[in-house]
Image 1 (tube, rainbow, N blue to C red):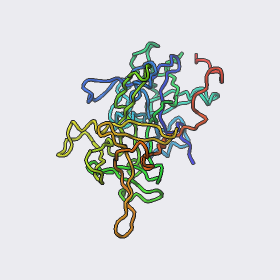
Image 2: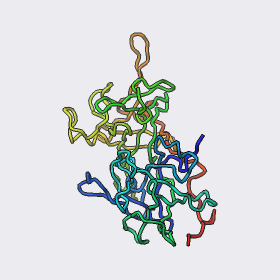
Image 3: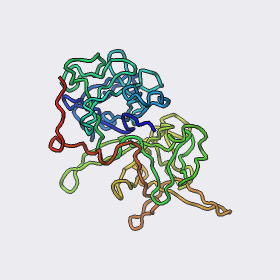
Image 4: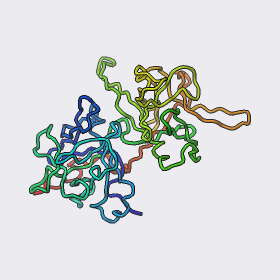
Length: 360
């Protein structure tokens, strides 16, 4: 079995020489086709969606299984639906369409230090490397030929360590192991029972139907008990449809929970956006969570019913949570889909392993 050079997962792209990280730049209006990429000081608390990148192998690249430097990868933001592309002589982020300029190769640097994932990152089938012209923050990332010396062309891949999982994840009910999924824009999300075939899927997109990402909705700093603290709220975005999980309000039922796709329809209005925001609370660290809707104050639950033939039906809904007796079905297991090993995180400190010298 072939081993990918880069395990699928979420990473920071940290410049070797300065320890600044590659960050996509906000634009106005947000729909701008190309967004610049610059280097900034690492700040996962407020720049999570712009500084964390999802790296994975391009499908159909099996011909390069035995050629590490030629393996093709995409580098994307989960929450922004954009990825790193070659845009002339600079790097930008744009919506991906499967074109060659979206593919990247990772050339290993310092292989004698495996705990430091250091690479030159080149545009697919070219010698142009991701480069920062100077060591200052706020400088745009360009594509240039190999330099000498070249510390501003070498990048470290650092697994992020936030309290909320990054990258694509699966969400399973902790009591039943049923997996949350979404297949069609105008249909509600559904649950795939444990070890059951997904009867709602009939093509190669089944895997993406069960993949979700936590996308920062807001970060508010407010006093608590005389000190200060943070209140994190997130959108829960489906990878296949791009829809955001939402509680429509009203009575509990099969269509109460939906996925809002920002498309104008007869039953979705702009004011509905708050119904897509969830407060995420860890119930049994590190993998068991509860999701409370910001607008309705109800928690996401799995409901099990039986029809007249005693067949079991499972669906996702939202209910008011009793503080004295919270339903066990309101707890969900979050399984990251990256390839990071526990032994790889966090990265060793300089006292634990000597960092290799900068290249000449």
